[in-house]
Image (cartoon, rainbow, N blue to C red; front, side, top):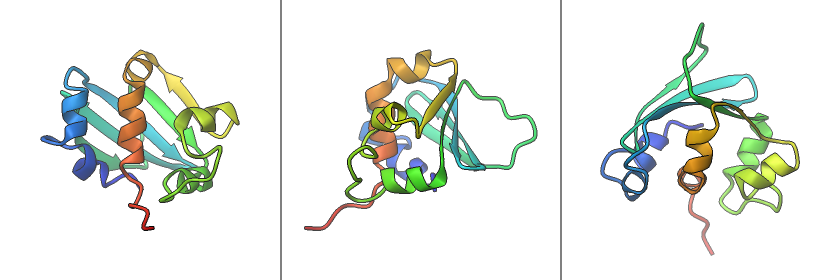
Length: 121
């Protein structure tokens, strides 16, 4: 579900340039599935799917798989269009050290939204 982050947020992408001071490890959870994403200098350098025995991460973003599918739709429905909308309705949860996430919230919103297929008119 998150493998394309290497393409959309990898080295040399506009998104990587946007957060060039950010280096962290994030756990993305879609239901029981876990994906560990490592960022260095704002660029996604690795995306590793679990299961993991003892993963090390700075913060985690968790939501049911169905809510991730709604968020990643070409045109997400209201309430699923934004990470904070998902948090507000209780579908998404943040854990761990939230400072890197919140200090770079727009970057993470754009990074995750970059996984959406382009909507065709």
